[in-house]
Length: 320
Ligand SMILES: NC(=O)c1ccc[n+]([C@@H]2O[C@H](COP(=O)([O-])OP(=O)(O)OC[C@H]3O[C@@H](n4cnc5c(N)ncnc54)[C@H](O)[C@@H]3O)[C@@H](O)[C@H]2O)c1
Image (cartoon, rainbow, N blue to C red; front, side, top):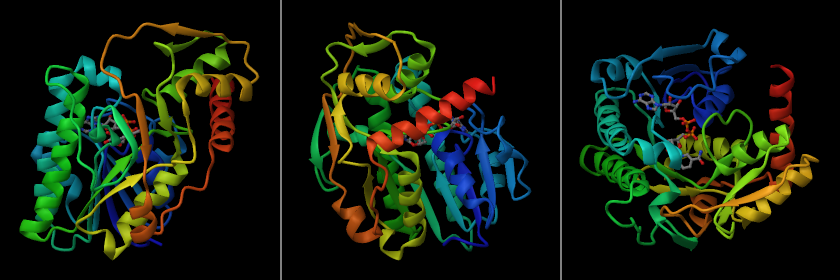
């Protein structure tokens, strides 16, 4: 249990960050630094919590980062341009935020006397197009230069090198997390499950890229939040990188679209659209390292997670 700490979460207004904040805020002081490029926070009760402070600002601004990190026991750095479509529209910004933003956060964190943990957010994209049962020690694969999608993976991989180098060179207690396709309530950005559920509930066509044979493992939000909490607590996490995902919940994108329509009793049709950009054909994590060092175990299987998520999106529609 993490109690009585000051926890700074960059990107904390986003999907994963706001979910983590929700879990911490009753027992800790939570400071969120976010420029509200995405916002899963402002329209919720969480923003009114007395233990939560939102600093609206940019991780590219060092003075703001220093103010947000000042006095922190734990820094969780997840501010990023996320989502393939947004990344492809903003490759320069993607790299700036990942590279300069992470350097700023690491620098400011290393100036704190009491810092117990720095959690860096990387991505499963570092494994490239084919990633079956991949372990943290496997070689990363960064795709062709010139494909905008890979600007995200290459700069996120650099954040891992940066975080773990701050550990090796300066003793900063850093850990990196590689999330594998997270879904669940409060997702405000992109992602196939977000797209499918929103459209299924409106009765609109579900758009599947190419033939829908791309394979992904889906991890429910509560499970990754548990993984991050373990990475914040466990001594063995320091200086390591971890895959966090749910290899049991693996299926093709076409079957995912079918599951969403079935579980939401939607009359939507599945429409195949041509997509000419770089894609990931196969991505399934090996999570043995997180199991062994963090005691991490995903608990929510896909059907249960989808039902909970559909329920949440429905409640949002009804609340206007
Ligand atoms: N959701 C996933 O499946 C997934 C998979 C792999 C990696 N990740 C990583 O996990 C982290 C959280 O992802 P998420 O799904 O919650 O995404 P998100 O887009 O919901 O959250 C990211 C947050 O960062 C903020 N942000 C962006 N640029 C900023 C800047 N310059 N200064 C301050 N704040 C800024 C956004 O406003 C947003 O609130 C990200 O680092 C992302 O790259 C997520």
